[in-house]
Amino acid sequence: MEKKKFEVPEWAFEFHGHKCPFMPIGYRMGTIALERIGVGRSQNHEMHVFSEMGIAHPQGCMQDGIMAATSATFGKGLIEKLNYGKVAAIFWYPGKKGALRIALKNEFSDKLAPHEFFKYRKKGIEPSDIPDDVRQDIIDMVLYATEDELFNIQELPDFEYTPVKGSFNKEKCEVCGEYVFERYLRVKDGKKVCIPCSKYGCAEKTVSFPKIKK
Ligand SMILES: [Zn+2]
Ligand SMILES: [Zn+2]
Image (cartoon, rainbow, N blue to C red):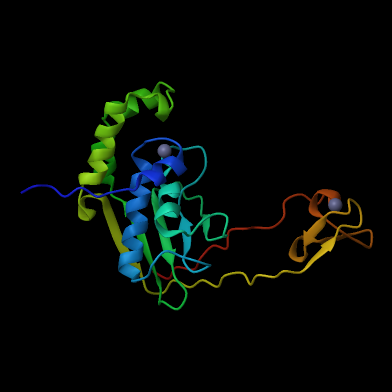
């Protein structure tokens, strides 16, 4: 039987900046999420994605693939990180019950690991400097794999999430004079000021850890 190749549009690689296997992995995750939830790309502020990735480990490219496939982008405030250090993401859609979690299978991760691509990466060579044929070969492993070979897909029926309500209200900081959206205004010595002028440090916990009842 001829194996079916999944197509990732060229613009997604252009947006991402280089050719690597993990952007396509994320693109496939996002595509599955849309299909399973039964929705299209988020034109406005619909799908929320909770990436389980963290910082300072490889494979974060997955998140650009998810954004490209779903239009649940960082700019629209629709993707945030849980910093669990896992190649997995949770997809939540307003009006749909629960959520969907998609995680890369250990077996597939282990199958990719011995590839020449990672020998270059571990030597500190950036993806764009790895020979084209080496990159294409590992990307094809992702594109020719079946959903079942790639992912564990899990329904989270009890997943609850309430997006933060948006507001257009802003005021000028009484120290630097710059506009600040009101949830980020702080009071210091009786003045309404921006966070840098307040010297209070970090804004807030931006990740609203979703509740999962297991
Ligand atoms: Zn990449
Ligand atoms: Zn200020």
